[in-house]
Amino acid sequence: MIINIYYQLVHVTFLICLYLIFFWGIEDFIIDVYYWIRVVYRKLFVYTKYPRLTVEDLYRKDEQWIAIMVPAWHEAGVIARMLETTIKHLDYDRYVIFCGVYPNDPETSREVDGISQNFQGVVKVVVPHPGPTNKADCLNFIVKEVHPMNCCMT
Image 1 (cartoon, one colour):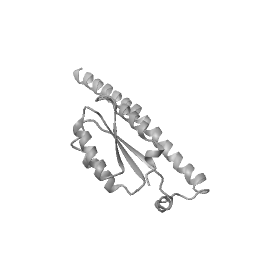
Image 2 (cartoon, one colour; image 1 turned 90 degrees about the horizontal axis):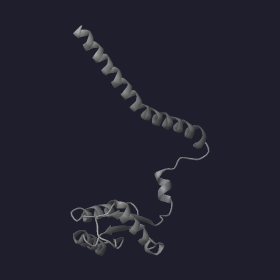
Image 3 (cartoon, helix red, strand yellow; image 1 turned 180 degrees about the vertical axis):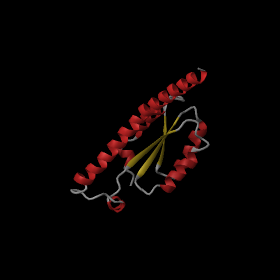
Image 4 (tube, helix red, strand yellow; image 1 turned 45 degrees about the vertical axis):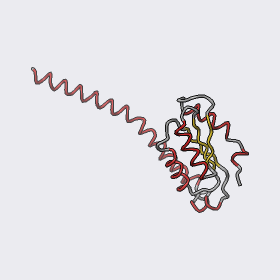
């Protein structure tokens, strides 16, 4: 009797786990099916009309100005190294990095000042109100600074 109840409990637990795994896996399955349908579609209809884009094609195109926006709050320990690493490893010349800082975070502001003095492609943007806020708030003030005149450095 006890063994029968035990087996029924194991059976029910197994079925619950099976159904949970199945339903959680449906999303992954749908994404996989969409991916493979897209691969086949592109192979049959897109790549027969248009050649694939290569890295060499990208390098042949003239660079356009881009803005990189970095919101920073209490990032004094890492912001200088992050900006230097970004500048060192970017294989692109026409960019401006806009780094948003807050008036009540002088350490991060000093670090960004130091980098912007050494690299003209780094612009410090001071958010007009004290932090912390969310990253979207900081990015909104950076976007106000990203103006075609600021990005078109020669």
